[in-house]
Image (cartoon, rainbow, N blue to C red; front, side, top):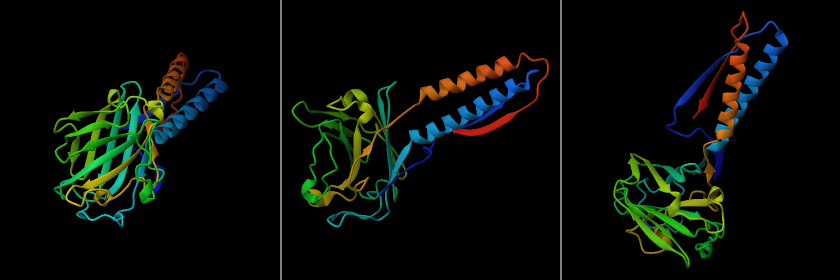
Length: 256
């Protein structure tokens, strides 16, 4: 299992070109240039860190699995982000084949809100902890199930989750996953597809992503970085009061 920074699929690229206007004081122009360079590097690094995709080895079905091996229950990558401003969890996952190749397949996203237990400890997975599960069916319907004494279940209709060939995408309201010991920004998760046609129990589970432990929710966006970017534009405007100018261009591709 590997977790590495990647650029989130489907997000547009912003090509940022800054024109720094020189003043009669060359040292001021140099200082502004240094500030812009630092800001661009900071924003780029922050955006990369904001999206950590969990990747999974193709074909690594569990030895205990007895269901379909058509590929749509074999995880290739997965990502869960949380936006505090909108209170939305955004889930994306890619599979080895188009979803629906296994007619009785469905997908379980386990989330630890702070009181997670190791329900699969007997199967050697002591570090896959969860106190809620989101089930997603092949028609995009499903349910958010909160486990434990204060649990409950909230169903969602067909088409709520989006299926695009071999990709599964869903937005989950934070109100359906209230804190249970952790702040929402500290939740952890794991994904395990199942084949309902297989014998009930652990043998229905094809794969875990990550393999043996949970991944952390990634928090987006990063308003502090964009505030700094706006401040740099203000510096450029100040520099533009000079009578003469020299073009100084920095081009950076930034994910937004």
